[in-house]
Image (cartoon, rainbow, N blue to C red):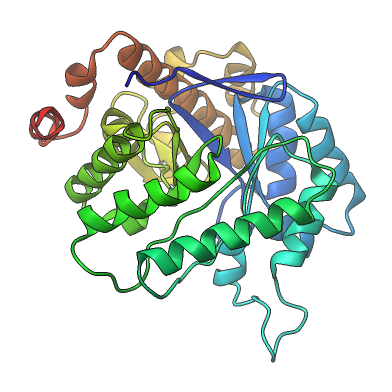
Length: 344
């Protein structure tokens, strides 16, 4: 089955494969409120905000919510995630001891208020049971979100987490579980955290390949979204294997080498600023980077934004012209082996 090259979200057309610029309050260099303003200014194809951040830290900040609304009405496709990443790391989930903690009701409230272009449903991050039991709970939780978020003119997409223990191998479990959930829900796309697909890049590459093959057997093309994939080298590998979209925080935590996609510490921007200035595609971004009055964080974030836009276009062009083998040559040392694995 041929892969699709575009997905439509409301009136916005998003080219695939694509990188979605994520914002988070947890250990990033760009604050979410600053990131939303940056997205309004520079207009990336897609941006993602955390439902937890919108609820916990900025629910009283009317300007933040107002800027999110402006972003939704821009050309940028606005993604909303479940917020469980931030809530988990802040240890702020609902419990008997923490009755004001993050839970599905809060997520549904935020989704109703923000009305993004697309949202990932509230997920159970550590499911237990066999594949059928986990599938049943994912579907149940998804249906509850669907019924609670009304009226709604944006798609909900399921997040699939693998059970802590399962029979057989990862290569057997992941494709089967995701195909069962997708077959039942018929979503616009289906998401799974990259970290659950294996220990190393090779194993994760094989997992994505097998998931793509399992989904294609359903008779319809379902885009695969990988949560937490912000490394450019990983994006190339997984896009070649059949993934279609990625969101990650590397763009606001590190700095990319424009030449090869390798990531360095945020403070290493000084090593690349002058060397790659001529590579910057956007005149607006070049203006900010060369502005002595712009903050260091703003300059690095803009540089990374331009890099990831260019990197995504390279992936799109090569996949559209069936240059998968050439694309994988950008994966250091194992690119040829990955291509051989893909052809099996």
